[in-house]
Image (tube, rainbow, N blue to C red; front, side, top):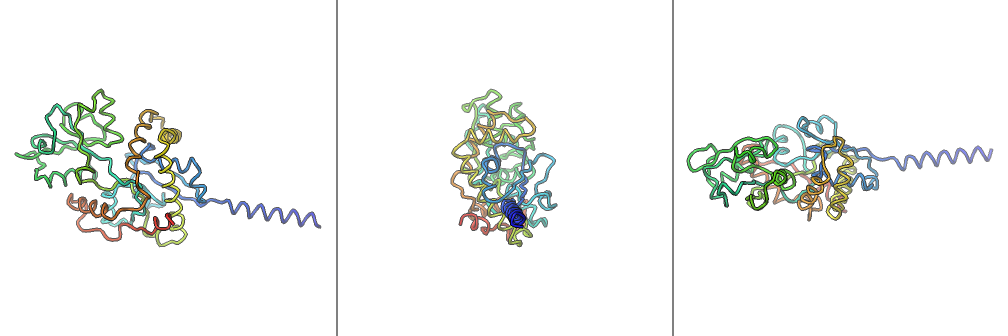
Length: 326
C-alpha cells in the first residue's frame, strides 16, 4: 500500500512538474524575410531568453506576399513588426492595432545619390529624378520635398519622383540620380556593386528631421483587454529587448544565429554580419519604450504625406513596456 502511495505521489509530482514547465505560446509575425533586421528576436529565442520568461515563441518570417497586419488580425500571430506609417494607415482604415513597444530608436532610411551627378546638398535636387519605394515608404521623401518647396511632378524648379523596386538597379543603371536605401541593406548593395563611399552622397532621413518610426511591435486592442495576454506580451517584450541588447554586444554571434534560422539559404555571413552591425546602431539606447515626440513627428509626416487624414488616437500604449521594465 505504501508503494502504491509513493507511486501515486511521484506521478502527481511529475504531473505538477510538467505543468510548471509548460510554456505559454506566442507567435511573432515579422515584416520581412529572416535577416539581421530582426536579429534580437532570433537571439532571444536561441539564448533561451523567451524560455526564461515562460514563453514558447514562434517567429514567422515575412515576405513580399505577406501582409503582417492581416496575419495579426486573422489570428495567425499575437504580435507583429511594422513601420509606424503603414500601421497608422491600417488603423485609420479600421484595423484595431496598437504599438506596444519600439525597439528601434532610430530610422535606417536614407537617400543615396551618385556624386557624379553633382548632388552635394538638398539645394541640388531640382532637375533630378529621385527613386523611392512606395507602399508608404515614399511618404517621408514627399514630406521632405514639400518642406523644401520642390514640386515632385518634374516641373521647373522641382524633382521627379520615380517608383522603384526594392533594389538599387535604377541607381546603378543611372535611371535615377538618387535612390531610397536602408543603412543596413541597399546601401551595401551599391558598395558591393563596385562603388565606394567616396562615389556617393547620402542623406539620412534621421539627420534631415523627416524620419518615421520603424520596426515597432504591434498587437490588437482585443489582446490588450486580456490580462493574461498582457502579461505574456510584457514578458515577450522584456525577453526581446534582452535579445536586442545581447545582439548589440555580440554582433557576429547574433548574425550567426540569424543565419541558422534562415530556411531559404539566401543570406550570406558577410551580408548578415554587416547588416547586424548597422541594425544595432538603430536599437542602441532603446529600452523598448516608445518616445512620444518621435511618435508625434512620425504621425505628422504620415499625415502630411496623405496616408492618414487625422491625428491618430489610441495608436500606442506604454502599458506593456511599463510592465516589462518593472
